[in-house]
View 1 (cartoon, rainbow, N blue to C red):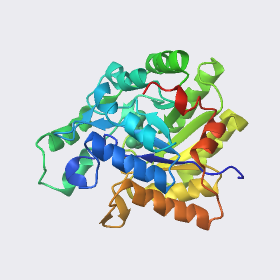
View 2 (view 1 turned 180 degrees about the vertical axis):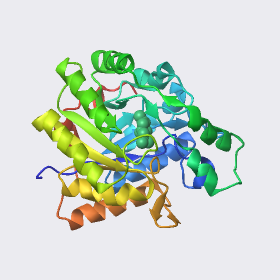
View 3 (view 1 turned 60 degrees about the vertical axis):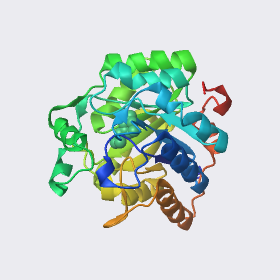
Length: 309
Ligand code: KMH
Ligand code: ZN
């Protein structure tokens, strides 16, 4: 309970579509600007995806990432975490490409194959800015988010073994924690583990406080002192679950990737606005917010000078 709290900000992701929020950053410039502002507001880790600058569709092209990574690195000391979850309908190989090129301090590692339902968003509106948006959301009804044992091994070989990258282990269910324990037993996943409890994805565990406690209890048993956890609640659950996670001794993740709102019915004007909000809450609880240097020490990261951009 004495560690400073790491705020991760997931800046754009691949879940929301441009119609859902005019503040969702799309172009490399927008992603860089919002990421820098989020770091200035207190985010020690920036979790990053890319999008096609014209259409806003999730994109995996490393050259797109290279249009914002150096700029964010120059302007901030934040830890840059590159998604390997990508977005529909990318292959696992495509999802790894940007991280392999950038050799980041941190990358995401999704701990199980699952359904990832985005299609309920279709019920909330009928007008879309781009024709691809409803097609994309509908496709999630029959999409498998593939993260097999072989995929997880390949990710560790390509990023940890080749580049010293560490992982944000994204766990959407109890079974994912047991899969992570299996990789620890085999010496593939190595402490200190940074485990992201992801609650509220349709296909994963629900965004209930009891489920967060259950995830924590299981992880305590499996990993003991070898892990740190962070909490990501989808949509309106983001703030309450992050606050509960912090009260339980965890770290927090906010950002427009997982929630486009700031308050009920009020869209967040930026990622930084969500970072400022959670920071106020944490400081109100008397919990200091981690600097990037403190996050690097807590998570044993290789350092911002050892990346490939
Ligand atoms: N939006 C999160 C629930 C990844 O980038 O690897 C999923 C995510 C996956 O962050
Ligand atoms: Zn992501």
